[in-house]
Image (cartoon, rainbow, N blue to C red; front, side, top):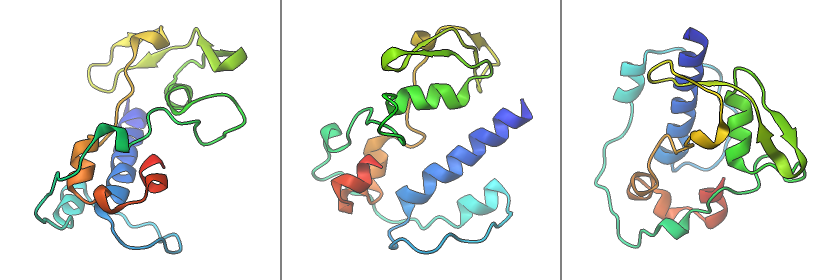
Length: 140
């Protein structure tokens, strides 16, 4: 459970960086240890703007990190989060496998029963600066 919680917090902090950072890409920063409360306190608060927002501005289930394996982003997340790995069949069809809910500890054994969602809602990302990103950056 601690491992899953740590992985979840790591994903949260990873998800927040692109949403709130407007700086150009730089060399990887050195690891810094801080509390979640202190990290949240570092987030710059600015006015949000939903002008021009459309869900279609964000590509849905792209081809994932490895564009040659046939697995879209949804399946890559399912593979990464499985506590018992599913079998990957042709076309990246997943069968079997086990996942544990971060929220209530429930065990799920059907990939189709799981929803994969954004750590930050897309409208919130748009409001907070993604409106100024290129389509390629929004997809990433």
